[in-house]
Length: 225
Image (cartoon, rainbow, N blue to C red; front, side, top):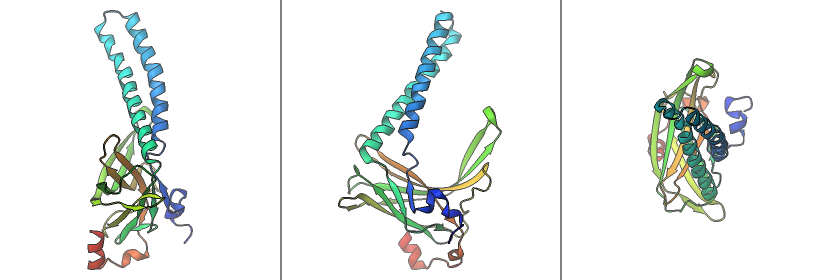
């Protein structure tokens, strides 16, 4: 069916990119700016106000800059190790009252025996104020977690099967009001020596005609719901 909300560009292909895909580049840019500005301001203020203890707060900016630099390095190493994971939808969309299913493809770096934690969350994001007073509050409306093994496919990296039952009273994805939205996130993590694996995908979950056909007990058991 065309013209449905799950036909939006970010979901149309059925392959969803990792939200962290460009995090390394973004953090690197922020780190460069904060380092250049932060160190310059801190040194200038300290030089102009020698012995003024109150001026020491400006050194918070270089500390933030160093933190951003460390985060940028971490994200860059993560992408170098694992590549750019994608979530391939088997259900497009995920259906309220039924299920979300698919598989996460990790190009490289994740051992087949890894203990992988998969979490599906429904989040509400409410934005208040504007300009410098703009603030977004995130609350979790629903959440389920599973421990899943990977299933190695030769030449294609690691494929992690995903299947969650979605309750019939769960709120669907809702982007009609940009200041009060509901989104669903699929998070996948694995603790490993060195750099941990972590990916997040914004997934489509909507009410469809299928929502009127509840899951059977057998289907629910198979989905872990």
